[in-house]
Length: 174
Ligand code: 5GP
Image 1 (cartoon, rainbow, N blue to C red):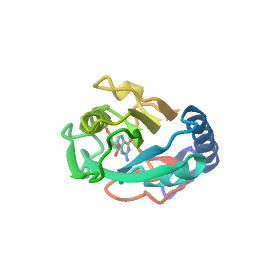
Image 2 (cartoon, rainbow, N blue to C red):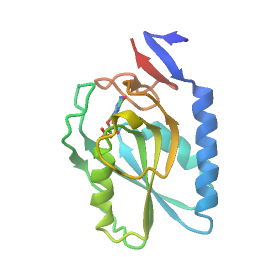
Image 3 (tube, rainbow, N blue to C red):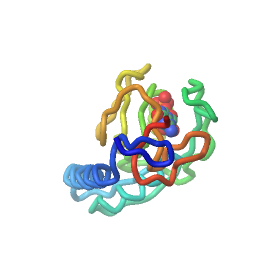
């Protein structure tokens, strides 16, 4: 395994970029003829979001939401807090929540419930990563990039205590 700054590469930049293109094509086909509202879940999703937006060949609207559950820990506190909400009305819109990683599923469940009461036409989620072993609640993930084990990852937007977000790959802290 390659290692950069004590971070072992788990998923390379090339693999991520190829998968993002595939996801973009899949979503473009599924929503053909429609306008999609893509919701970036800050901060962890910002790089994935920026790449995916450009891989989707549809008219899109960009919205941003911020929630927190981790702080400086490597495990979820279990309590989800809303830090930034979407102020635009979402009635009749096709929404796609763009998540960096679905771990316990608590964050995604919270966001889906928050948005579903705003009368959208549809809601789906596209997550770059999913940790099925860590799941605590049932919540649908319609599109996913990669499935990983129950390990803490950083890079490509994901942090450990606000570090490593800039790495172009997904890595494991040593
Ligand atoms: P969940 O609510 O599903 O437990 O956690 C979702 C959020 O926790 C993600 O959006 C992400 O910000 C953070 N998270 C979960 N697993 C990891 C991980 O392995 N690494 C990092 N950096 N953040 C994670």
